Amino acid sequence: MSTQKKNQNEERVYIFDTTLRDGEQAPGASLNTEEKMKVAAQLEKLGVDIIEAGFPAASPGDFEAVEKIAKTLKKTVVAGLSRAMRKDIEACAKALRSARRRRIHTFISSSDIHLKHLFRKSREEALAAVADAVKCARNFADDVEFSAQDASRSDLDFLCRMIEAAIKNGARTVNVPDTVGYAIPTEYGHMVATLKNRVPNIGKAVISVHCHNDLGLAVANSLSAIRSGARQVECTINGIGERAGNASLEEIVMVLKTRHDLYPYHTGVDTKELYKTSRLVSTLTGFMIQPNKAIVGNNAFAHESGIHQDGMLKYRQNYEIMTPESIGVPESRLVLGKHSGRHAFKKRLEDLGYNLPPEAIDGLFAKFKDLADKKKSVYDEDIEALIEEKIASSREIYQLTYLHTSAGTTTLPTATLKLKKGEEESEEAATGDGPVDAVFNAIDRATGFKGKLENYALKALTQGKDAQGEVTVTVAVNGDEAHGRGVSTDVIEASAKAYLNAVNKLLLKHTAKSAKAAFDIQKGLKL
Ligand code: KIV
Ligand code: ZN
Image 1 (cartoon, rainbow, N blue to C red):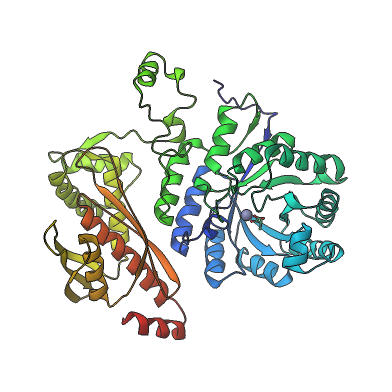
Image 2 (tube, rainbow, N blue to C red):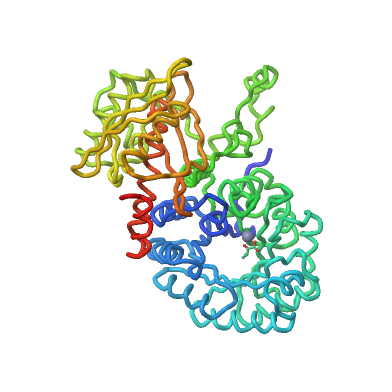
């Protein structure tokens, strides 16, 4: 097993994270501005080189998110995507104007399929559009990236001409995406090698790759491209993205680290932040991570069979090629129990990185005591869930005051609950085809909201029969959707909290919309 020693002469592979742009394009993954800012802050901590924060011309929401992220990030380059069109590039430049370090990323397709059936342009017209777009972008930023969409299905000679034109007009990074996830590793590596050999000015730009995972080859293709000379990889946390997703950032970074013998390059990523970043993206998007997902799945470091466990005890490297600590998997330590005092609780909060004012600690300590009465062992994950709930509840329009359910094999499942909205309280009861359905129906009645449940998932937050359940839901109304999360030792209560969390987000979203749109939606929501 190799360890990564940083050699000063070693080349760097730049990590371009597109979780907030391509990742967010995954059906059902939409994030609000505040959530995007949280992800961006964590990506900066992770140490990625470039964060593609969105597509400013696509919607006012995207514009706002890029603008706010650009204002807050300190060292990471913030990129915005734009079609090869003046109005997109101007929107991008405007959204990025307060960034300390900005990049305009502009694209047009290079494949005949796209040029004919998507852009309705000839090859010559496309080359002219590349030159205009890159020149225009250079008026607003020194750092300009050009992408030849669908590069992997393009005529190689024409692709070389397009890349040459982009560099000639000022692109510093040239990206050749496998947009539809069609390429295989040898072929994709060959494409990058051809650019290196044939494009006369290629030395003036960094070659970037951007692979989709339709055939499950996104990571393999990216790695093959690195061996052929690509020095920027575009990827997303947990591999989320359009259709089957993008190349997974954590997998690429850990291959570079673990197989440093074959990939003698370094990145700026602090791998100890990978697990935390993956969890954050999963929680905020509502996309659960499959247990066997490489690097960040729950089973990625679990050794189940007797032979493997025995082998691990004898010598860890018998079955372990990287350690859970290297990606920052927290040791699920038993931290506190019902006899723990405020002092121990405060110390644990500090160890977890939360320096909170005394009033906040008091509130959390009371919640911790309630929890410790319900479950014997309180883990770090439980404490973090309490903090997240406290932060979320301060913004919730509706809060859950109480909840009762009755269900069983011979009774009609019924839920009774009370919600609070400012000074107003509403109490409702409803039945359903199970206790969770009854709770959701009662919430709909109490809020006058008619949400459609698109997705529901339940998992245990920690080990043990008394573990808290974590419920994530996706709720849709009038074409808008939001994710909600709730945690409790009682899974019905966790479900209620998750559903209410999503409803509150939708209400906030709608309140922020224009007066006419809000009016139309309010009619539907009976606010
Ligand atoms: O997949 C793709 O081609 C893209 C480009 C816009 C970079 O996402
Ligand atoms: Zn893409």
